[in-house]
Amino acid sequence: MKILQVLWQKKRASAQDITDTLNETEDIAHSTVQTFLRILLKNDAVAYDTEGRTFIYYPLLKKGAVTLNAVKDFIDSIFTGSPEGTISYIIKNMDLPQDELESIKKMLDDKETE
Image (tube, rainbow, N blue to C red; front, side, top):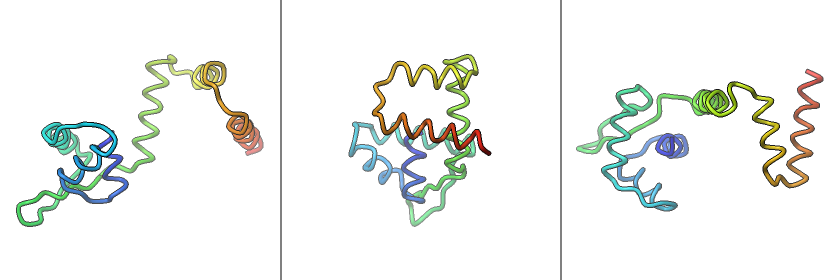
């Protein structure tokens, strides 16, 4: 997912560019990035062009579709498919600032009037 996030941000990047970007926030080996790129290639999540001897990767999947599937998988696996359970847990157990709570309430109110 982190590799895809880099590619969504940069649009196109070499494996070394991806490694360098990820290493700004955490240590990750270049070989690990290359391994995950091979997996993403095999799963048709990314593709590449060649520039000289360098592979330049780009995402094939849209960020919104991947995010929605990841959220659905999370809700299914942790909250047995219940969005209500997920939202209830977040509101009850996370220390959300008042402005975020008000924003959530507004989203719910807006959804109700659709």
